Length: 315
Image 1: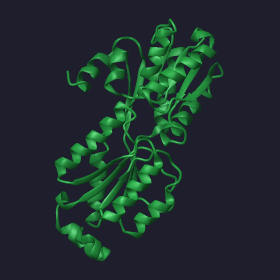
Image 2 (image 1 turned 90 degrees about the vertical axis):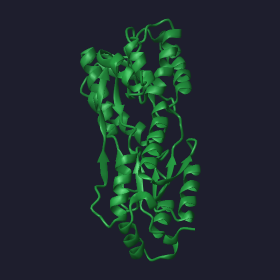
Image 3 (image 1 turned 120 degrees about the vertical axis):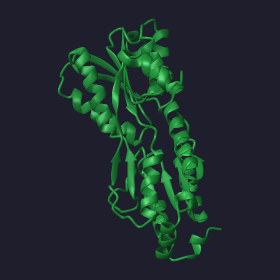
Image 4 (image 1 turned 45 degrees about the horizontal axis):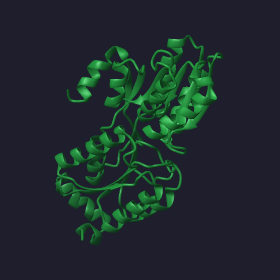
């Protein structure tokens, strides 16, 4: 049982201020491991916690919000010093966040957003600007095609911030190009297997994909699955059909190096360090916290794909 459970909040802050982060216990509810990027995200948080001497209580939600809410309530019951949540979807968080607030446990939101930003129920959100990621992908595609393109879209998980915002940013840009059209759009749930399955169905519905200019995928895992479907349909991905995505995982850089994909906007998985910095500062009494800390990455293409793959795959 943690001593902080028996002390007033003010005294807890004094204790936290007088000790290093080595005494900190943090609960982390992660979406799951649906992609290589998500796995890298989890591993980087664990590594950063170990480096700082933080006791990390990690919970894999297996893509289910109900599992996340159970985990957060468990963290509250255990009296952790802080909680980090990488939410499956945006809605449905207010009750459990209110419980954390009543327990005087600060919460940091990582990656996807929650629908509670104006209620003072969490300290900050640390994430990429997903809308800007969608814009960057669309700008690249419009430049490559002179704005004349019939597009298939693989959406992420329905209700997830990344899916909502990447779609918004992409659509904002192509709205200025009358000859650019998304002809089919369906969720691939951010997974490689589902991406391939959905792409197969969309290609069959679109004359085998012969009249499709590009695939726009909300993440690399779905795109990699879709690339296999494109090949099985007798087309050359990266040439017959351009492929643009988001994440920057090693397997996608390999696909670009092999000529099977064209561009990706990097999503930084190293969110642990800024999250722990915010939590540590807060526990020491610093209440000046920005409500959003952004970590938007660059767009990469085939030009540097082989070099980037070598770096990221540790070769």
